[in-house]
Image (cartoon, rainbow, N blue to C red; front, top):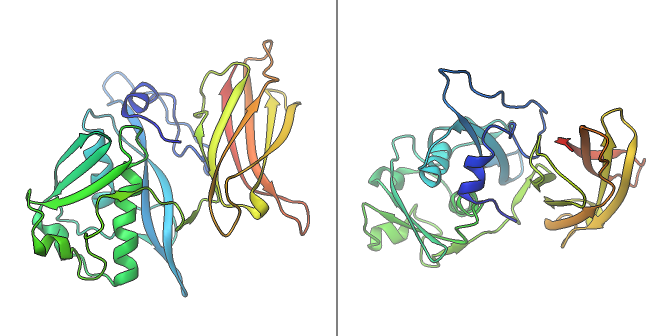
Length: 276
C-alpha cells in the first residue's frame, strides 16, 4: 500500500497536493525556469482538548533525488496544514543521512533531535510520525534511529519516555485519525484504463467504503463498495477493482466516501480527477 521513490519522481508533474485531495487543486507543471515539484506524505501530531493523535498530510516540495531525507526534513521544517497539528522535531535538527538496506531505513540525526520537549504520549506519536512518513515508500518497511552515527544509551533514551529499546519500528496507522480516507492509487490526473484498481486507507463506519466512477459530463459509470480490513474507530486498508472505464471519454472523476447511517449523507468524500 505504499509508493516507491521512483514512482514519486515519475509522477511529480501529475500529482496535486494530497492523494486524498481535500482541496482538489492540481500542482501546475513548472515553467521554463521553475523547479520541478513532487508530492510526499508526512505525518504530524495533532492536539485537541482531550487527546493527541496523528494526521496524514501530502506536501508539495521541490523534486530531489534525496527523497527520503527530504521527507523527514519536511517533518522538521514544513508547515502543518491541519488545524491543531504541530511539528515535534526541534527546528535545529539536521537529517545527516538515511541508509536503506533490506527494507530497513536507518536515520542518522544531528544531536539537536534529542532536545524535543514532549510527554510520553507525544514521544510515542513523534517516533511513529517519522516511521509512518518513511514507510510510505515501497523500499522501506522498518525504521531505526541513531544520533551522530551513535546508538549509545543517551540516544536509546531518546526523549526520556518511550525510548528506542524496541527499534527498529514498523508502520502503524492505528493512531492516524485524519483524513478519514485517503488513496494510494490512482494518483490525481493519472491516465487509467479498465480495469481500474483503487487502493487506499479508511477509518469508516463498519469498514464500508463506497466508490463511484463518473464520466466527464457527470454520468455515473460504475458504483460499488468494498470493505476495509478494519472499521472505525480502527483504520483499515482497502482495495477495489472498477471495470467500466469508458474508452470514448477523455476525463472522469473517482469518488470515494462512506455513507453515514444517520442520514445517508456521503461523508469524508475524496474526489480524484482521472484521464481515460
